[in-house]
Amino acid sequence: MADSKGGVVLLHGHGRTGRSMASIATSLQRSGYSTFAPSYRSPGRSMAHIVEHLRPQINRFAGETGGPLHFVTHSLGGLVARALIASHRPQKLARVVMLAPPNRGSELADILFGLRLNRLVLGPVGPHLRTGRTRIDKELLGEVDYDLGIIAGDRPLDPVFPRLLLPRPNDGKVSVASTRLQGMRDHIILPVSHTLMVYDRRVIAQVLAFLETGAFNR
Image (cartoon, rainbow, N blue to C red):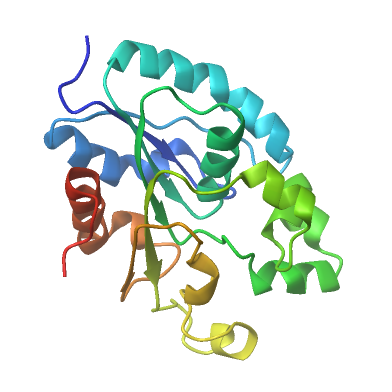
């Protein structure tokens, strides 16, 4: 049965599962949205494979929901959403909220490539996480022509390690500068870490605000 507010697809980050988005999903459901949080294997799959794995599931959910379709993503999930929208744009695509997306790559990924640990840690999606991406990669992820809000964090769990390796401010894995994307409608920085932001009440409140109004609360 179609939900009055539509549906929200929640896409998790690298090496995690749909269950990592449970706190956000619960809040969305309480606010009247239907939710779908599929899992995908990022360490061992290419971006193209991930997209093809998720596409029929998302299409099915969109058909069941009937109304507008939103996306809420964490980390790598933001790039997955961009690739999905670029290649298989949902007919009723509405708003997209990205949490800590490495839209301009991650310096941490660059370090792993330098140490030749990229295949072990990142797998086939590794090249999409590097800074200074190629033209082909930009074509894969597409341009932003939809309502996009981005939430960045600036409180890494480890106060020392990220300061030595990443541009400041950062959330421990992705710099604030890297989260920004041309065409975004709004951007906000919160005092949260990359890993734990999906459980933070302030983050969840801002997700709801953007889905409802197209802007973050300030």
